[in-house]
Image 1 (tube, helix red, strand yellow):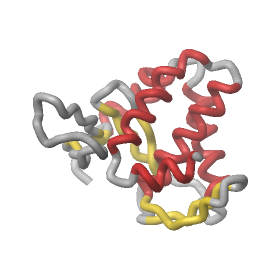
Image 2: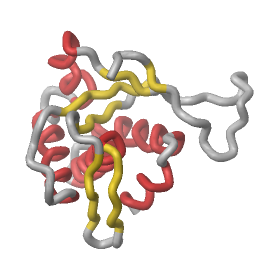
Image 3: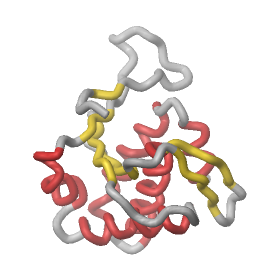
Image 4: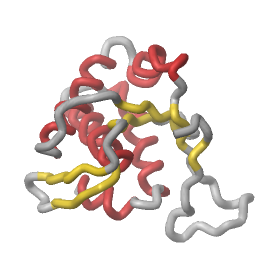
Length: 153
């Protein structure tokens, strides 16, 4: 995967007019900036809890997941997410809402990141509110928005 901006499809209801359509892009964080990613986006106090929460969520959502290298993505709206590298698809099951579907690694990572951020907000990490909202804005424009929202519902 290159370190270029990843263009997204327009969200439902948006027009192709660049004056009115604001799209959120995602950029893969290059290796030389990986060490700065977690503290910059999630803060020094919450970064390790956040990272471990994402891994825990992935393990809960996918019984076949057993760790590995993760890519870090930065969003043009200031948000961020992470997703597992080296595997193309994951079977994701969400207890409680009936979601059971095979999804790509990026979508699996977005789902795990959203659950992790939401859980941390419930545990009082209010400093992550903006990151959660930025990720939700990105999800609304993502080509697989319906699938992601179904998993999070």
